[in-house]
Image (cartoon, rainbow, N blue to C red; front, side):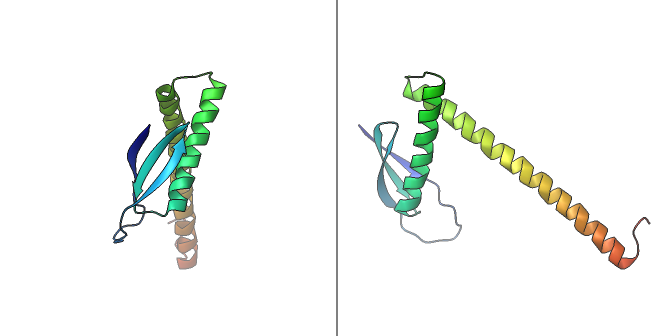
Amino acid sequence: MREEIGVKQTSEGDDKAPRATRVQIFGREYLLQSEESAEYAHSVAAYVDQKMAEISSERNLADPARAAIMAAMEMADELLQRRDSRDKSSGRAAEALDRLGRRMDGTEGE
C-alpha cells in the first residue's frame, strides 16, 4: 500500500517546485511531496523509520499506528528539550554580553 504525505519546506521564499520521492517507513511505502531534495526526504524518512523500529522493539508494539504515535511523542520531546536548552543558552549568552557591555562602559553595578 502507498500513501502520499508532505515534508514541510524549511527555507522561506524559495520557489522550488515540489517533487515526489518514494520512501519506506516501517515496512510501508510512502510518496512524499516536498520542496526539499530527495536526499533530505530519505533522511527524514529513515529517522522516522528508525524511531518507530526502536519504539516497537523496546515496547513490544505490533500496531504501526501506536508505534507511530509513540515515536512522534519521543521526537517531540527531543525537539522541545533541545529548544528549551537553546533558549536557556541564548539567555545566558545575552546576560553575559550585557555584563561585558556594562564593564566596558564602566557602569557595572550601577
